[in-house]
Image (cartoon, rainbow, N blue to C red; front, side, top):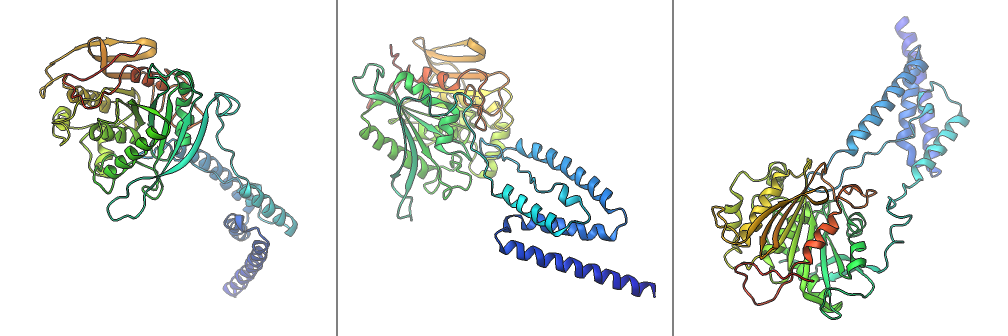
Length: 457
C-alpha cells in the first residue's frame, strides 16, 4: 500500500515537472532561448528539492558552494595558457545561476521575470579591452591605420591565397638619411591574436610616429590554423614554408607601394611569431636587415606540434650550434643581425630557448665556429635600465644582442597592459628592438664575412 502511494506521489511530481517544462518551451518560443539551458537546470533543481524535506536550505548551500567553486575555477582558467601561443584562454562565468535557482518554489510571475532577466544578461556583449595608456587606443597615434588582403602565391594544390594584414603609416618625417624612403618593420603576432591586437599590445606604432618607419602586421587566418598560430615548426611548402613565402610576397608589395627603403626592412615576432621570424631570417636573408625574437623557441629542434611543445618547455637537448649548422641554408647564408628578448620568469617558452637561440645567431653570423670558439669580434655584458644584456660585437657594433628582463613572464614588456600577454611595467621591448634595428642595414649582393653591419647616425 505504501509503495503504491509513493508511486502515485512521484507520478504527480512528474506531471508538475512536465507542466513546468511545457511553460518553459512556450517562453523559449517567444525569443528567450538564450537561457534555455540555465532555466532548465533551475527546474531540475526545483523538482529535486520538492522530493527532499529541507530543500531550500540544502539548495542554497549547494548553490553557494557552486558559486565559490565557479569563481575559483574561472580564476584558474584565466591563467591557463594556449600551449602554442601567447594569449590565455579566458574563463567565462555564468551569472544566471542566482537566487532563483535556489528557491524550491517559484510563482509563474517570478519565473517569467527570472527568464527575462537571464535573457537580458545573455544578450549583453562584453566591451572590448580599452587601452590603459590613453582614453582611446587610437587617440595618441598620429598616422593612418588600415587593413586589407594581399593575394600571395598559393600553396601547391590551392587556387588562391589571401593574406590579411594591417599596416600603420606615420606622418612623413625623417627616417634615417635615405631621402623620402622609410624603413619597414614587419611584426608577427602569436597564437590567438590578430594584427590589430598585436599593434595595440606592443605599441610599436607609437615608436613609428617617433622615428618615421612604416609598420606591417601580417595576420594568420583561422582557416590556416584555428588559433591563428604560425607553423614555425613545420617548414614544408604546405605549412610554415608557404606562410613565410606569403609574408615575403606581402613585404615586397609594401616596399613598392609605400616607397620603402629596401635596405632597412626588419622583422620581429613574439612566441609563435618569433619562430616564424626566425624562419624568415634563415630563408630570406636578402630581404631583411635584422631580426628580433621575443619569447621565441630555439631553431631546428621542433618538426611537429608535439615536438614544438617539448621545445618550448625545455629548449633543445641537442647542441644548438650543430642544429643551426645542419640547416640547408647555413652554407650560403650571409648572416643576420639578431636581438633576442626574453623574460626570466617565462613559464610558457623556457628562458633556456633564449640562450640557445642567441648562440645560434652568433654561429649564423660566423662569429664563432662549430665548437663555439670565437672567430671575430668581442663580447660585452651590461645591465642598462633593468635589462640584463649580453652583446656580441663587431667593430663595436652589436651583431647579436641577448636581452633578459627580470621578473617578466610570457609577455611583451612595456606595452599596453590592457591586452593579454602584454604588460605596461618594465623596459619597453618595442624601443629595445627598434634601437637595435637602427644600427643595421642590408646591402644586396654582398656576402657578409664577417657580417655586414652599418651604424646609422
